Length: 319
Image 1 (tube, rainbow, N blue to C red):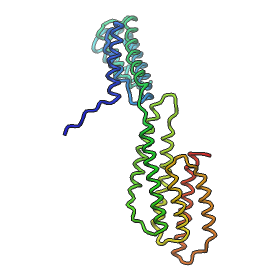
Image 2 (tube, rainbow, N blue to C red):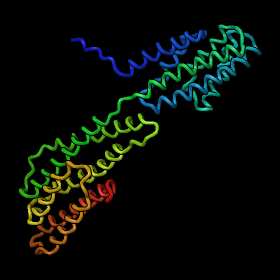
Image 3 (cartoon, one colour):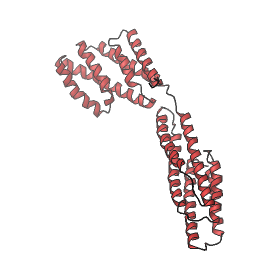
Image 4 (cartoon, rainbow, N blue to C red):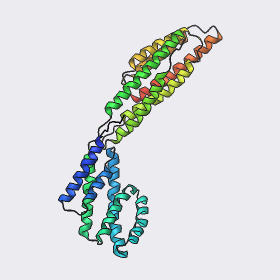
């Protein structure tokens, strides 16, 4: 079955920008008007930041191309070997100035002078206008780039649901001593974190003047917590029996799992509860068997890791 063809917003912008650039250049009676459309195509990027960088590099490279054309063609004539000689010097200069992205566009400008077989300041000014029209149209169209907040918010909610379920399963194990959980939430959570970071970086680049890295910092925070969760799971899996203190921690995890869906919850509240829980455990009777002693030691390690978990959240949402 043939897949349905889908036209994206960037395709629409490219088509519209190309046509508009050519139309403006033709209206100004500029020679080589179609080149304005080519420049627009090359300058329309997925994000505003990338478009601005690309536009800057191409403008500088094109201005250099005009200067090189004046020097080389007037000195050595309008010959194919002159084009080769010009490029031998021009390309390394663009690389040195870190504007190599503009090599293709500027090479078109060079060929315009070659085909015209003359260099005049009027023709040079017309070439600059073509560059400005092509780049300017691309920048104007790139003012609109759909943001990914809805997708990021959905990934955030999905990730928090996985964390909540993980803590529910841990609480169940601490109470009952058995784990019939398949662990799929771990895989889903890891996937949400990676997707979230990648999408958040793209989203941040879509803004030129505003800092929109909050989602990236959020997913990095959850990634640090995820490392702790993996260590906790490894610890819990080594507990051979259940103890009273395990049930106390299970109650805490159940309460935490119910609040984790709200990203702005104040972690310091649960950090205080965890500290009180640790004090209560110290006041309980000493372990009577070696097995119970080992479980108590693992539970204390578990609490230490949970303190780190909450501390990470507390630094992300300071009081």
